[in-house]
Length: 340
Ligand SMILES: C[S@@+](CC[C@H](N)C(=O)[O-])C[C@H]1O[C@@H](n2cnc3c(N)ncnc32)[C@H](O)[C@@H]1O
Image (tube, rainbow, N blue to C red; front, side, top):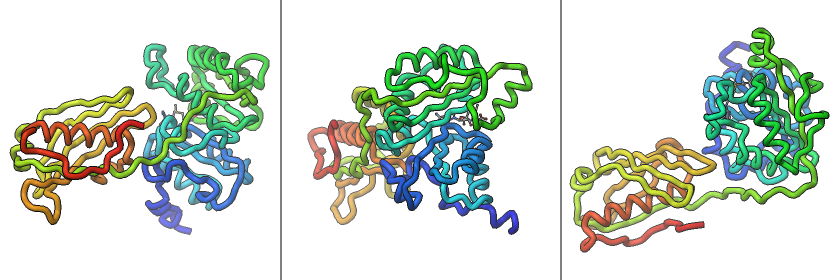
């Protein structure tokens, strides 16, 4: 087989934005088997090892680095593995959107957050919300494995885990200085060994203690508004200044406007607790209607999903356009969800 044949076709690329929410993993893999997740697989050495040693399980790897994803996809194609898949997603997004409660048999996290500083707590993987999401998605009896070479990180993780009644350590203390049996050495682990740093290996099991309910986030409808305004696209564009809208913990920024041939494109950023999206909304003359009638809708730029944040952006932008000429503007119809 030539190298070219080992390259996976592009359509094998999976992302949290292109998969159904939640994923039916039995349908995805074509059979039902225990489901194992590795978060931040990096070079994929550990995922490849899991794949070789667990042919009877389904393995899902999450990464945010494209380079790592392409490498892992090549590994999967080279071995012709049909029980392994990699997904472009932040762990937080995948755990909330792609998996249902009590669906995972094991979760592995190896050497996360290498530049860990206590003050960078909001960006790190091991934090209360993400650990709660991991615990929610683990089955009772399911296992959580974490390895780190940073002592402060190990102490922080030990405190978090001690405060998690639904997990129980499989070691005498929070961690073991010895690798969990069956492990292989990952790239970061090898670096730690070369540089003389100790590693801390956590192995915890989900107990029968109930966990706080963590909802499965379902798809929202495609947002769409038809509005009437006497203003031209150019006048609306000239009046534009960036603005923000928020609803509880959802924040959206309407950052920039661009003039297309027959439309305006508004660049937006929507930040929600479980997902960040960067996309554009379009405002264009409503087809089949007379002058002064416009459609405001989501575009496919950035492959967005119609979340609450995107609905909030559409609502905020429509309100802003109406406020430019309140007496002569109105909404003709809308497909927009408000609140939960
Ligand atoms: C220090 S590397 C460790 C890689 C590998 N696990 C190892 O032990 O060699 C951390 C990896 O986690 C990925 N990562 C960081 N934050 C992530 C997140 N929120 N969700 C998924 N992957 C993440 C990074 O892209 C990187 O590849």
